[in-house]
Image 1 (cartoon, rainbow, N blue to C red):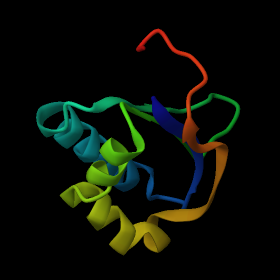
Image 2: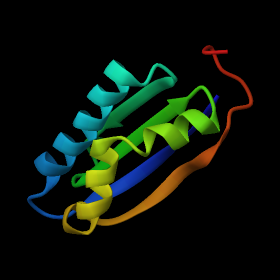
Image 3: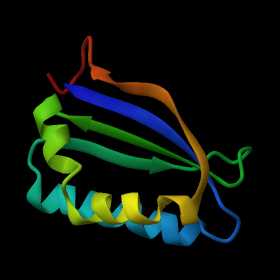
Amino acid sequence: MYGGLARFVVRPGKRDELLEVVLWSARIARDAEPETLRLDVWEVADEPGVLYVYEAYTSREAFELHIKNPAVQRFGEIADTLVEGWSFVIPFTESLGSTAD
């Protein structure tokens, strides 16, 4: 399995727009990317203005396919208008073990 966890600091007033793009990508993955295992979004109560996005794929190749989906491409075009900054909590890498294996 291949995946990672990113932390996005959302620009003021842009949470819903960012969430819309991320959830659009998740729907595309669910409906058309059988090798996308997870695409989850979280908010943490004591971190207002922050979204976490966890992604897991069967392989790096599945990830490469995912980043070509229309929502990911759109996010790349508008990311600077939605996000003040981001970082990896877990950089994309191969899993050492999982219940998905």
